[in-house]
Length: 205
Image 1 (cartoon, rainbow, N blue to C red):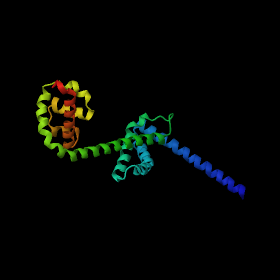
Image 2: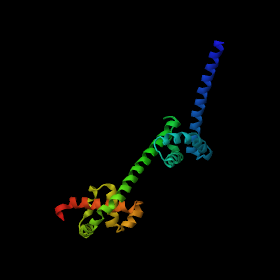
Image 3: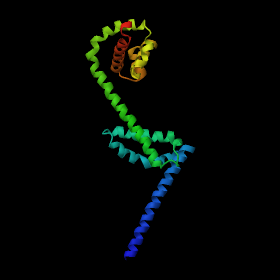
């Protein structure tokens, strides 16, 4: 009886191992089919396999269901686009896909943080609206100087609004649309940039 039960357990263990091996090989085949042949059926199979797992992991990072869904969609879109970068010799398909998911998650978390900062800019803008007259007086003076020499002293997001406003002659509204930002954010960045340029140019004005 004991021998028979032990034999059955070993048999079950071998079956589980075989199943895992088959799963791994199948995942590799599907990924390679997507990479080499743009095989839509293989991608569908990958999606069915990974989507529920990614959804569960993302739910632990985001309280918003929509964000979890976005992690799934963005991850699997990148799997389709970047499947050619996968190498079976360098790791398991699961490791590669979860690395893609991690990068997507980090990007979305950064965007969430940036969105919160943009909303904060909208909130604080009315507090400084009264100072815009001083800035417009400064605008004409700045335009007569070689402010291009000082642009590298600014953060990239402030540099964008200065270039658009002074060198591309875009209005603040056009900049907001061009950069896909709230108007209040563009105004805040422009004001911060002007203040920094004023400090940099200093007595040279």
